[in-house]
Image 1 (cartoon, rainbow, N blue to C red):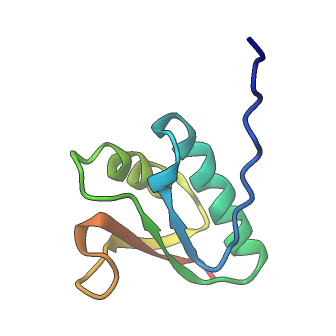
Image 2 (image 1 turned 90 degrees about the vertical axis):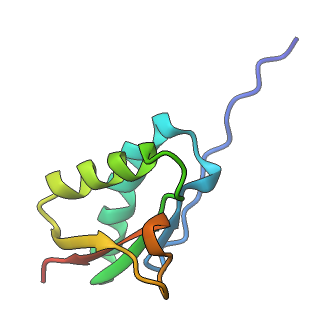
Length: 93
């Protein structure tokens, strides 16, 4: 049986990251890379869609946002931005 290597994921950075297609073990690194790309492209605010579920991905996302010095603030989305299934953030200038 052949070992299939995982294909690299190309993220389009438009200010939104949807984590539904990723494994929880990949989320920390994805969030870090996503935020770095947002900063590099001058994106000042965005959204990370983690889903509602039991909150595992939400907690990972919030932990990474808390630690990241590029982040000014974050909060759960409102009814227009995904409610508690997404987190919106603001980057430091």
